Each structure stands twice: as C-alpha cells, then as structure tokens.
Image (cartoon, rainbow, N blue to C red; front, side):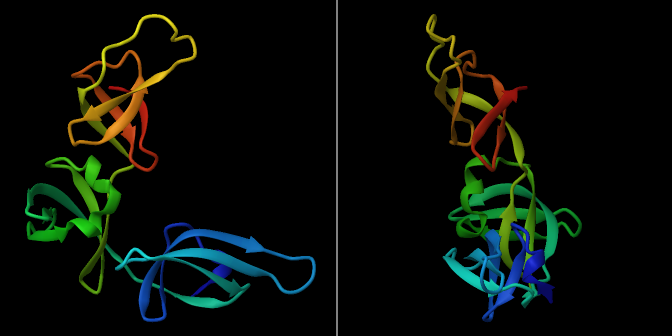
Length: 185
C-alpha cells in the first residue's frame, strides 16, 4: 500500500481490480476543507484515461511489476517478436502493448517489457534513440536566421522536425518522449 501523497508520474496502481498508471497528479489544499489529490489515471489494458480524486493520506495498492530487458527481433503480422536477454525465450507482443513507441522501434533494439502476473502490460522504449534520416527536403539558403525547421522521415517511419542543415543519410538523436530532434550524431 502507498499513500496518495507519494504518487509519481508513471507509477502503476491496482484500483478496482484493474491496473492504472498515473499520468498526472496534483496535490490540492483548498483554503477551507480537507486537502485532496486529483489524478489522471490510464488503464494499462484498455488505454482509457479517467480522472479520479483521492482524499489526502488515502492508501492505494501499488502494483508489483516485473521489468525484463528484451531485444526486438522482427515483426510478424501485427505482433512484434522479442527475445528475453536472460532466458533467450521469444515472446510475441501485440502492437497495442507497445503504443506510440512503435515508430522508434528498430531491429536489435533493447527495450524494457513490463509484466504483471506474467501478462505483458507495456513496453518502455529508451528515452533517446539514434536513427537515420531517409527523406527530407533539401536545405534552404537565406531566411534561416531564426533557426527554422523542416520535416524529416526517419528509417523507422517516424517524422520529426529537424534544423535546415540536416540532410538525407544523416544520423540524428531523437527524444522518444517528446518526438523532438536533439542533435546530429
């Protein structure tokens, strides 16, 4: 059990026989009345997002998650085949469990797979990935004093805004949480 005063973004809780991940939380102390914690929770199985308010100090059950490092091997239909780095066992993970991270997933990449009671509930893609630019418009001369950007398609199909000096074939580092260009590698 954990107090709602100790909630953090990304923490997984067991509420009403379901797994819910904390998306946002706000501790509110009104001038009159008792303090409370307003949260946004995302269902781990369905992806549904709900708002829930708890009284300050209320206890909730923290879910015990098993985190395994796995390597992405290849795509088979709508499933992604991953290999456990310890047991070398291969698992088929559905596209829905990976979520938005699919657009950064490339072969042989290591990811963390989250399991609850041996059921896959999510996949954590690394925060920064290095990908090659496969298609971007040519650089423009002039009118670049403000540091403009242009769209670039990466080797995995993701589209990111990059500075004008980036060309086809360049390797860039991208922040997978915000879909932003970080630097050229």
